[in-house]
Length: 383
Image (tube, rainbow, N blue to C red; front, side, top):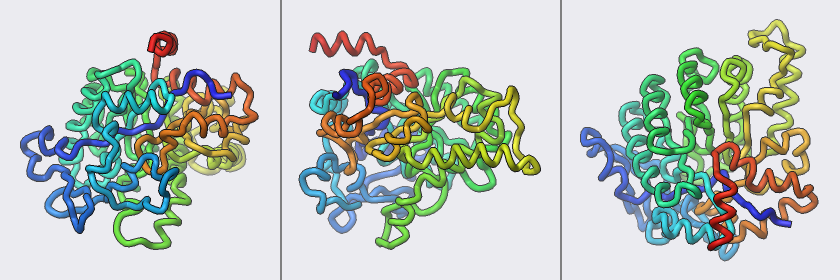
């Protein structure tokens, strides 16, 4: 049985082509991201000629059901679902898909964590956050936006996080994996963790947001692209371990971390390995927790995982924790469950007790991002 309330913890907007060229601070306008047609396909370009990615994989909702052979990194803006950039159509698509509310991440913006110039990246993120807040104001009870935050300068990141909260955004995403010498075990991030906890802003590590390295799917096809996709949970797992082992969640018990679009089934191995390492490797430089807490205890208290179709992870839900699992549709990307989310979710939850399915399909997302469940139910009853 499909739960009555379905909320997507991982959906996306698709930024209009002129977002940054019209909204970015004037000092950066000549360097702003833009969409440029190259050899018949639209590419995301930054600075003079840095091609970041094509748009096909982030704009092709429904193709997996109708014509999967057409899916590629190549695409054109005129083929992007209008709901990606028009809030009215987005809400209509949610109704079509049977989804009551969505947590919204960027599409093109995922790739801009690779921008090398710190002030430029921060300017890109500010312009996006302004636009996203306007998008979500069309129906803030159903649309919860996630701000993009650059932590190259932690003080600047805190200011933008505070501004995002004032704009009404529901959380913030940071790079899934920072530069190697600035990983999340470093004390410089302490004021940021404190600010996020104080503001009640959940933080997200979303796929495709590494601060360095080649973006999957960009450039010539290689076997290593497939290898990178198949092992993509490696980097957020490192970030998670850095935060737990350095005591971030002990010092900031109200901080919530969402690991998004990496599925579920990688987590049990990491939980067991963290607890084993903590227990058996006393000589290593690991922060020692108070009150007999183990690394896995902080995961279960402070971390949630957003997944799409992980059947193995569902079977391992007793280890992962039902309260730590949130379903997401990934609309409007090529691998999205749209427009068949309710049917797919029914298949995913087959055999799962109703009380657990209700949490996985929506209640956990409502708790983390403060959806008003009673209001959504009233609105749906009068629709």
